[in-house]
Length: 98
Image (cartoon, rainbow, N blue to C red; front, side, top):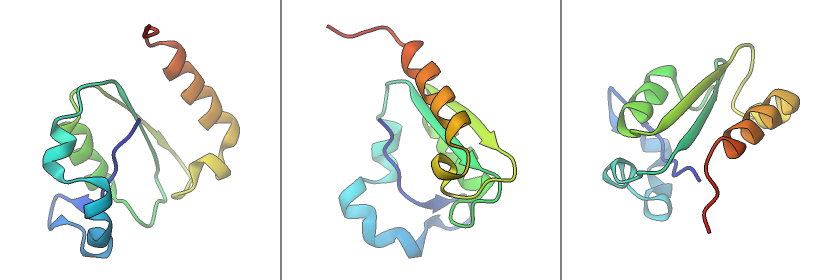
C-alpha cells in the first residue's frame, strides 16, 4: 500500500494537491509507514518531480524505487507489462502474513 500526497523539497506540501491532504494524510504520516513500499515514477511525470520522489523515498525507510524512462504519470497505462512485472515481483518478494 502506498500513502501518497504531493509535496516538493522546495515548497513543502504542493498547493495544487493540498486539498487532498485531509484524505491522504500528512508528511508526518508518511514517516510512520514501516512496511515495504514500492515507489514507481515516470521520468516525464508532469505532476511529481524527481526531487519530490527523492524526498518521499527518504521518508519511507523500506521503500523500493524504480524510474521509468520516457514515461509520464500514468506509467501503469503507458508501460503495463513492466509495471505488472515489477508489482508482481514486489508482492511475491514479501513474506505472506497469516
